[in-house]
Structures are given as structure tokens and as C-alpha cells.
Length: 144
Image 1: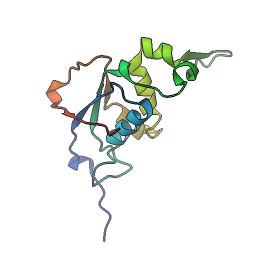
Image 2: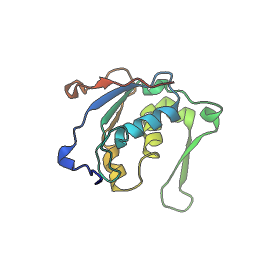
Image 3: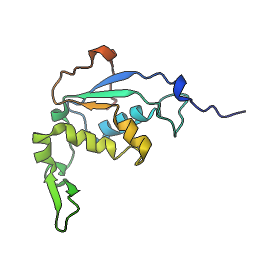
Image 4: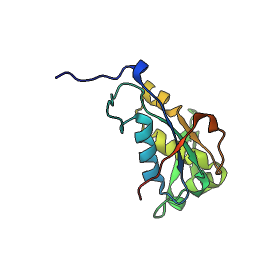
């Protein structure tokens, strides 16, 4: 028996639309990361970019459990002394709801070149419309 390794020329890429309305952020991000990575495919290879594209709509209606809206902070550093900036999750969800989902998914992808390539196949939109009708996306239902 030989292990089948997927070649980049053999990969077929599909697009899926996921509605984030009322979905829990962590469970949504896990499902999106698995689709982007290609873990649902039969010929999954961990070192090849073989996942599908994901379009997430209604990002502002995502749900967080517990006290995360008031107690979860997102940090970034300017690389200057004392340059640590923080923003609370409820404020970021009001101003940039796309960024909340993007940061959750990015943390679940590999932290290398492959992860940066996979992240390019994620599109997140605030409202119910998206400009990707040409990709013929299929609707992906989350089990909750």
C-alpha cells in the first residue's frame, strides 16, 4: 500500500457560503478552518493548500457565549516601548465585525506560509450580500 499525496494540479476548489447569524463564534471558526484546510476531503494532505473557499455573511450577528463580549480583549503591538494597544470584543464587533471572525479563523490555521495562503480563501461580509456570485457558491449548513 502506498500513501496517496495530493498534487496541486489535481485539486478542485469549490466555494461555500456560511451564514453566521446566531452562530457561536468558536464553533463557526472551527468549521470554517476545517473547510479552508481541506480536512473534509478524502485525499487530504497536510502540506498542500487543497481546501475550499469560504464566504461568511452576516458577520455582525455572530454570537459569543458567557462574558466574552465584556471581558475578551484583542491585543496588537506597535513594536515601540509602551505600544501595546487593546480593544474590547464588543467594541470590535460593533465597528469591524469581519475582523472578529477573521482573527478567530486565523488562529486556527497553521502559523506558516501554508496558513497565510489558506487565509486568502476566506471572505467575510457584514451583511447578507456578497459579490461572489460568479464562483457559484453552495450553502454550507452548520450543525448546532
